[in-house]
Length: 114
View 1 (spheres, helix red, strand yellow):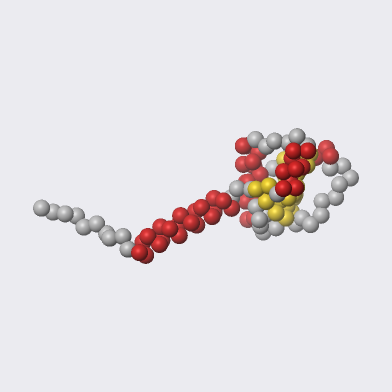
View 2 (tube, rainbow, N blue to C red; view 1 turned 90 degrees about the vertical axis):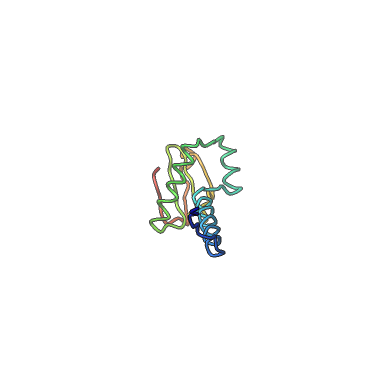
């Protein structure tokens, strides 16, 4: 009888699998934007709820800003505006653009129109 040789799983192979999974999990978590308490309160105050499509656009915007080296970004999406900490993947504040008249946005290094 012939038995094909199967490679033995070594500790090194198992460790590589674990680190690959950990890296993938970390990358997935980093790619999803989160909202600060302040941003959640602002969304609720203004009656803003984001669709899955809008969240995806926001995530894509954060990824684009990260690629360009941004740290803090103003992101404009139709009638909404978000100030996002790109390095932390976190929306710092959110507002409707019609309530932005005479408002100054400071401490940003980029702006994206989504």
